[in-house]
Image 1 (cartoon, rainbow, N blue to C red):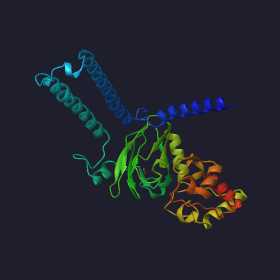
Image 2: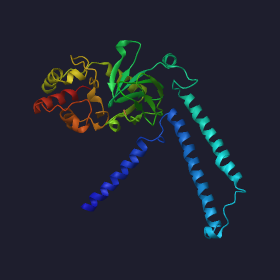
Image 3: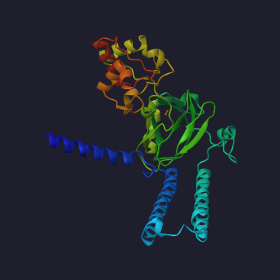
Image 4: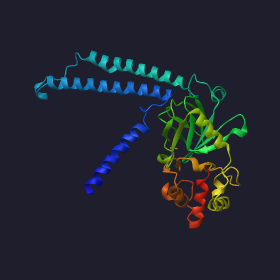
Length: 347
Ligand code: CUA
């Protein structure tokens, strides 16, 4: 039994490693921007391996040709050998690093980010790269505002970024507090969220799928638990999702959900969270209008099921210490199950 358990542990650890490798890796490519980055990464990796191999061969040759002790050999002569240093130590690295630099520059101009010499300014970018989505980094979650010239077609959600497959989407990133970095490796490189300095990134996914991401700039205690997820859908499914998100929160039907709504709007929940269509209009925490349809909770750490939802409400501080969500242990058992029933049906 113990051996079986150990084997299962090793097998699941192996599966997790493979899973991690494929889930969040620069080489796991699902969009044109990520593809150019992966090409550069492959070029650098292969170059590094070839260089290491050549260095190993040269060291081995030197090792086998010079036998004996130091005393038996004459002092190292300063005549000869300079050509090796000039070619191997200066000329070849200059050529290789220049090639990589040029490839890197061309890659940057494919996916413009303002603020670099020769790149447009922030205000020009807003004109030329009008954002479709505004992403705001918070300690430790992601606010996502879907923008539209028609204000009645804008909405806010959190942590789960929906995108239409095969279409490029312009994203503006800002931060509400400290520096963060937005990174979905399958779609594009990292872009920093800098206080007082909007930044831009263009995302495009070639095919539908779920691609995970991660805050990539240390931003405090729960930096590693500031995850996000891109859900890429066929354009028709994406449009259906948008139409659904635009609706206010679902009216509760069951008596438990009705009671849960009353608990929600009259408790501390409503002062931080919004559920559109109810008096709950707090803006410092994720918008919960459609929380029931999200796959994960707490910035994509836990699956969105009743058990985790209940645990998160009552004990957020032990699940994600220092986050702004307080532990709320004072609800009765019935209030908690009513709250969960209410949130669950907000699809
Ligand atoms: Cu946000 Cu690290």
